[in-house]
Image 1 (cartoon, rainbow, N blue to C red):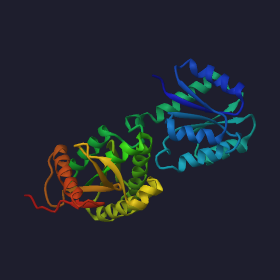
Image 2: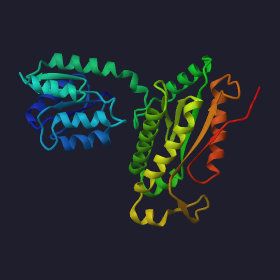
Image 3: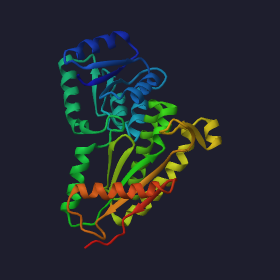
Image 4: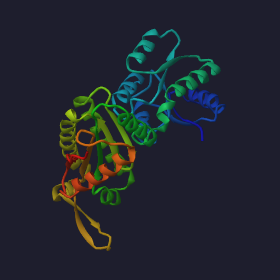
Length: 310
């Protein structure tokens, strides 16, 4: 399966020319004729690259680009702005909005394909990322953990996941479940960026499991912010009736209907502050144990490992 490319242009003839050009490289093509439709597709279909005309109806290309690059989960999505011949202001506006490259109409097909290949190569390192959140996946997480172990510096690893997520997913469906995961990713990124260190790392293990790598000095404030922001955001993920009730009805493992409380987040924090950690698996084992301890509270919480082990 080739890369997925979204073409955004209100001129059907231009879209046909672009589709024909892209078919040479086995790209999978989706189309939108205005900015509103483009943003909807970007948020639901996760294209690998967007070919975006500057002058489109409803929401112009510059604003579409600006909104995408402002979103913490979408900012790595490459955008090539398509501008009219001689419209230097459009080119400057597109680049100012965060476009990764631009092409001028009428374009030379071979040049366009070369530019697409170049931009996709540039972002290839993100392909190992989780397709839903675009956060680094397991390979990158293991590499980052190993780097911390090999270093002599102090570090703290936060293992986070959601409580009652399966019940939520069963009742509201996978699309809403995906939105919960994306919102959780945004909360983690924001907390680390605003309160952490420049080299802190956020990864997506899969499903509703995440990891944040920071330092012992920063970890308490980061965990508190994650919990505060998640608890603030969680009620809005429910219908008004469920929100007012403070629970949903779901079936337990015996098939009995029970009340399940609203989503919350549990975090287990592993650190080399009080013990020497020798391998990555050790971090995972301790993290799972601490996260289980945090879940016992039944509400959003974090548990740190303070046991001194020589």
